Amino acid sequence: MGSTSTILILTLVGVALVLVITFVSLRKAGAFGMSRAKEVQAVQLMQTGRKARAMIMGVQPTGMVVNNINIQCIVTFRLEPLDGSTPFDAQKKMLVSQTAMPRIGETWPSWFDPSDQFQFAVGQPTAITPDQVGLFREFGIPHPLDRPLS
Image (tube, rainbow, N blue to C red):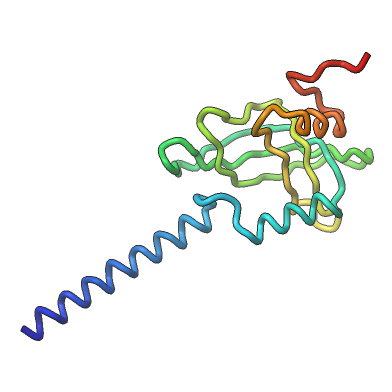
């Protein structure tokens, strides 16, 4: 009876360990949305970083799919700072919906750290709202539903 209990306990511990490792791996990959640290960094960049237009230059799926609809991709951007400084290329690993895949040539608002240009956040379009249209206008980016001011 003792060896059966030991085997059962070891099996349960093994299953729990696999679940923890899987959860941690998915969390690091962004499967549950933006981590708290990345969210804080994005807010800080929006408050203190420099503004740029981020043009999508490439979208490369990594093969990871979450919830049968979100695909992890490495998105390559060309950031063009609004202050006229030299444009630069940078990449970001992102989860994107299959129904809203970024397209090469699209331009999104972005903010970057001038001391480390590879620390940047992008304003990925998620909904058509007056706030989003205003944000695109602020960055000089045409929005599909934006009407020119009369």
